[in-house]
Length: 188
Image (cartoon, rainbow, N blue to C red; front, side):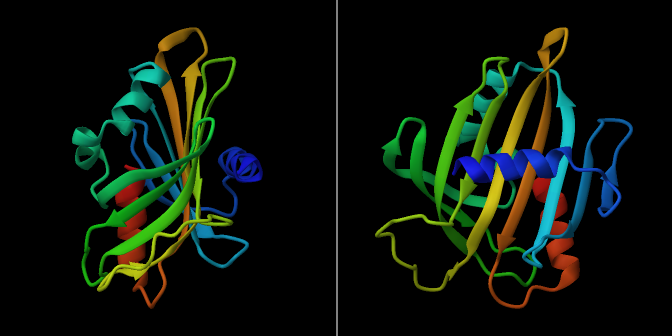
């Protein structure tokens, strides 16, 4: 999973020349971009600043009763098995959206806090070993890499720059308009 974290950091830091801008909001500072990944999947990155410390944001993101308030694509998120220090095998199920049926993912989940207070969590289905089988009526999708980097703003630890990356293979034919909307929703 560490190479996935490094890849995610590289995507966040890459220049914007090959990205398509979906949202750039002056009012809330959110920027959402997409492009085709090296695997020819839709890759999304988003960023913005939040007026809360990084650790508090992570706690809110992880607090299950609040999840549906910020992740409108999510129906279920559960850690199924602890596999190491801050590492889990987790299960995620999405809601049905537009013409897209629910998808589920079995993922490795890795969390790290760096010495400067940056909180990073990254998920991927790659090399995920689990006995969680497919569910009838739900498409088993593949999470190449999804995650967040929560970086304290220099000089003001009460603010955080939040960056997100998502690259998933939802399996099956997904209309481009629906994929753009899903990525836009996920970025917000």
